[in-house]
Length: 277
Image 1 (cartoon, rainbow, N blue to C red):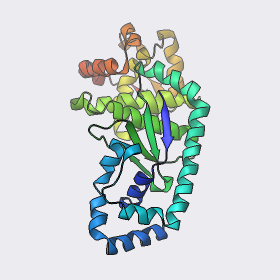
Image 2 (image 1 turned 90 degrees about the vertical axis):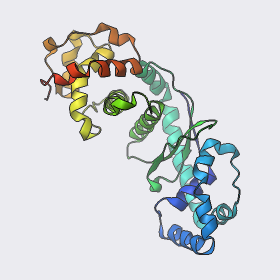
Image 3 (image 1 turned 30 degrees about the vertical axis):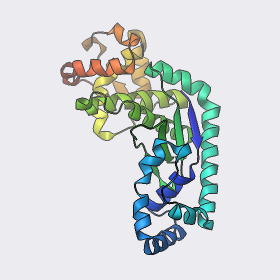
Image 4 (image 1 turned 90 degrees about the horizontal axis):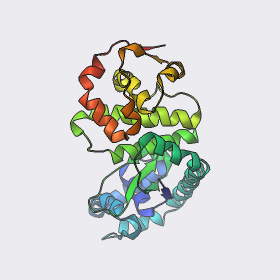
């Protein structure tokens, strides 16, 4: 897995134009553009998918709006702040990738493509995973910042994995999302921070993840003898005697584990002995 972080002026301008205003000067500038160039402003809306299709080579049909924005002093300040954020992300990635890559490989057991992260000002507070048909690169627009840099990277990778599995077993979205949470927001984050994060994630998936959890430990290759330690670590308890230990799960990848959960869902969700310690 490899992540490349870049600031793309066009995608930055587009998000400043069409997302909520991040400051009064930005709001004022947008109002002036709307009053004076209403049609051009509206026409620019379609460019988002085109930029993401090929960010490096995008050329707008009409660059009037872009030029006005980019020549404004407010944009210069935002661009500087965005570049600073890009460097922070890159530094966190570079400092931790020797741990991130093998841990992800061990958890997912499938190869992740190279991703291009187009960084925008974190005050925009956005994630854009638009899929453009015919796009040359896998791209995510990232404008989210957490106090903990590791959490920022975990959340970014979580969005990448969701994008990788988008459309997979579409009829069972809750199971797919629950497994992705277990893999990234829970296990991967736990390994990166050395503190359990198994009680975090979407509250609506809490019960389902508890039901899958014993099989998830089998997937991770946790032995019967080790399971009590994991229960204590993650504050999730279950009666191991109620479960058949599925040794084959430790040999499959995340896709196959999802298939296993779907195939056996009636049995998995019937078990109601789980509890929070």
